[in-house]
Length: 271
Length: 306
Image 1 (cartoon, rainbow over the protein chains, first blue to last red):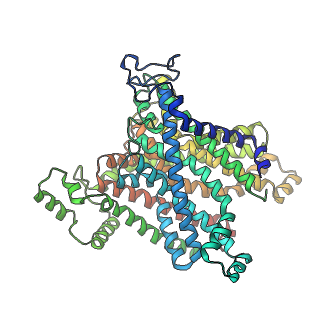
Image 2 (tube, each protein chain N blue to C red; image 1 turned 180 degrees about the vertical axis):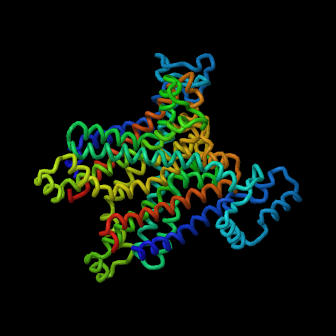
Image 3 (tube, rainbow over the protein chains, first blue to last red; image 1 turned 45 degrees about the vertical axis):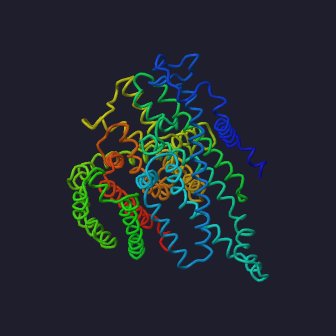
């Protein structure tokens, strides 16, 4: 599988860029030249200079440093949110598929309702109920992610459940939980992995969208969407502040997409 | 076909009800007393009680939900907390702009996406294919509100070609439509390429070519027509995504549409407005999806039996 993956240069590039951003997110504070919250009113509205390669905003805060710190926030929200969605969604999907009939019907109808609100609208509903802020943005991302994971896992489990070796396990006396953990889950893994990767990208779009609207992460946190909201105010004076975070978001989401597509191609035995 | 259509419409009902329930419970899930939210935090106990009665919040929850549903079906979505006027009025006022943008974006995305996807499929693995696919991927990865800002920067602020704020003239709709359509165009392009590749590999295409039919006719009359089916279903499904996308795009271009209505209402804690507007958008989305499914069986008879 690795060999197939490595042959796909775009996917490898995507993976490397993702890795770079993850490193940036982890090492951020050590790497950033300035404190992202430090104001320097003497040097505000500055375009790109040697001291500030990406300029400063209206309060004199360095854009590059804010961007680096923002990686930690944006990626963090995405990873934790999708992770939560993955755990809950997988559980729901597996339970629905395994126990069938009423459980299946109820769970999947609930998922349909969650899917009836397109993307950012669902996130807005969640944020309306819970309020804004980083934690609630994470929860909004998680709720957004749950239904698709549930559907995928349900599909995989339904397929695998009918295979003979599961009956053999039962005949030998294995418990439901053991069958699920040891036999069903590992085989459902590859669509889950691919979907998780793609979701990580989408989650960043959703979370930054919420923050852009003022409903998600609140200023002065340098989350990329929130930075773009500020950038919009400064678009006439210091356009770089509106350009840079968007490029970052696009780059990261693009990389996750390439990575996910590459993983899908590498993991699919039929190709 | 009729049986499938009816079945599909019936399936819609529990989802609609569930969505209505979700939307209805928004105000009740918010921590705190809804009556307090309406009356305002500094209101006296009498004002709070009056608000409670006025908005029917003293009734048991199932009764409240029933009233909400009944109201929704007769066109009464409650009163705005902020303006005191009916929610429906504001929604109707704003709906036009959003609809124009969403429809325009759909048409643009479909035309551009299908053109690009066809070119990519026909010139498979050559430069054009690579370029189109990269552009499609970038289009899908770009946050729509950032694209909006960039387009505004280029076309409005630097080159002064197009207006950026408001809806005074038809030209004001151009940038929002292009912004919103871009992401969908990318998705449609990829879908079209994939569908076209499948179709072009079919035997009847080889037959047509062997008969001496001109390549252009082969592509349009034989291949594209058959590739149309999965592409159209994507278009239908994307419509919902576009409605949601207007939330972000309208914010940037200051369009007085439904999307901005929702955002403003959330920021102002005007819950009846949020509930009403979200319900309208969700219902549209569900209905369009159901219609797309039904249309799919009309266009492709093979799908009917599923």
